[in-house]
Length: 473
Image 1 (cartoon, rainbow, N blue to C red):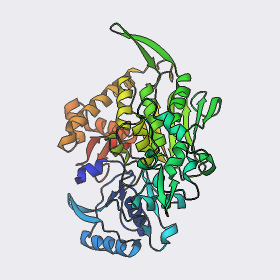
Image 2 (cartoon, helix red, strand yellow):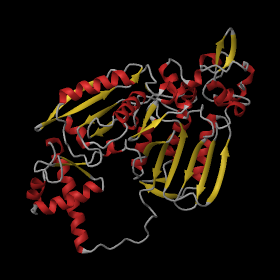
Image 3 (spheres, rainbow, N blue to C red):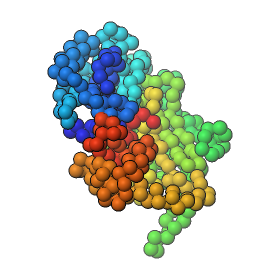
Image 4 (cartoon, one colour):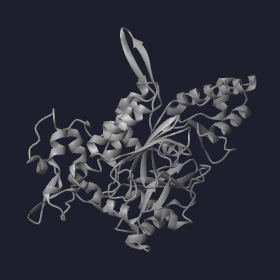
C-alpha cells in the first residue's frame, strides 16, 4: 500500500500513527497487538490526532532504533518489514507487521501472561486468559469445537436430534457422528467433541451454560424499557428459526405489488436477519463464560452480538469481501450439511445484498470489548417525523458540501485536491473552501493530508468509508 493511501485512512485495527518513538512501550504494545490480531502498519512521523505529517529527522538512526527495540522487547521473535518512505523534504518510517501463526506474541518484560495485547478498533487491549487460550488454539490445527470432552461418553449425544435435523435432506447414520466430528477418539475411547456437545448434547448447559440466545424487544432507541424478552435454549440449529420468529413478531409488515405478484416487505429482510443469527452462532466463542448471544430489537435498529472477537488474521473489511475463517469448524460443517449455511464467508455479502435490495444501508460490523456485533438499520425511518426547514444559507452550504465531496471523489485517483483547485472548480475563494473543508474533516466526511492547516501543498480526500469501518466505535 502506498504512502498517500495510508495517510488518507483513519487509524483502526490495522493502522496507527505515531509522532515519534518517544513512547517505546506504546510502540511495542501496538506491534504486539498487530501481530496477535490481523497485522498492521505503524507509521512514524505523523501526529495521531491531527494527522499532521511531521516526518523524522534521522530516518536511518530511527530505523535501527526500532529494529533493536523490537528484537529486545517482543517474544517470540517478531520480524516485521521496516521501510523508510520519502515525503516531500523529509521521511516517514513504516513498520509493517504480518499476522503470526506462532502467536501469541507478548511484551517480554511483562511476561507471557500479562504482556499479550490484541487490537480492537484503534486501541490496544490487554488479553485476558480466555483470549490468550484462543490465540493459542488459533496457532494450532484444531478449532475449539473440535476438542474432545474426555469426561463424557458418546451416549451424551442425542442422535434423535441429529436424525430430526437431517430429515428431508438425507438419512443420519451413527457413523456420521465421527465423520462430522461430533465425536472423536481420545486415548482409545470414543468421546464427544465440544462441537458435538453444543449441537446435539443431552445436557450441554451443564458445560456450556451460556450457549443460548437472549432476545429482547425494547421500547424506543435504548434499553430503558423492555417490551418482550425470551431465552432461546433449543439446540443450536433450531435456534435460528425460533430467533427469526421472535424478530418477525416485532417487525412491521407491508404488502406491495410487483407486476402481478404480491410481495411482503418487512422492516428488515428476513434473509438478512437469518444470516445475522446464523453468523452469530457459527462465530461465537463458546469458551467464554457469562456471555450468551444477544439479539436486541429497537425502534430504529436490530443488533445481534456474540461473544468472541474476529479470529486472528481477519478484519471487518475481509468479512465484507467474503473472506472468512470459521471459529467453530464442526458447527459450521454441520450447519452446511443441514443447509442452514452456505459456503464459508458468504453470509455477510448475502446479508448486505438483502439490505440493499430492501433499500436499507449495509449492516454495521464492529468489534467491542470481547464481542462482535452486527447491526441492521431502518435507514432513519420514524426517527424524525417532521422535516426541519433549512435557511437559505444552510441549503447553499449543504449543496456546496455535496459538490465538494463529488469533486474529491473525482480527484481521488489523482492524489487528492488542493483548496485552490476546489475553489477554482466551484468559483469560490480559497478561504471559503478551507473553512468548509475544516468542517467536513471534523465531521469525518473528508481527510486532509499535509504538515498543518497552513501547508500550501495540503490536499484533501473524500473519506474511505470502508476503511473507516475498521475504527473502534
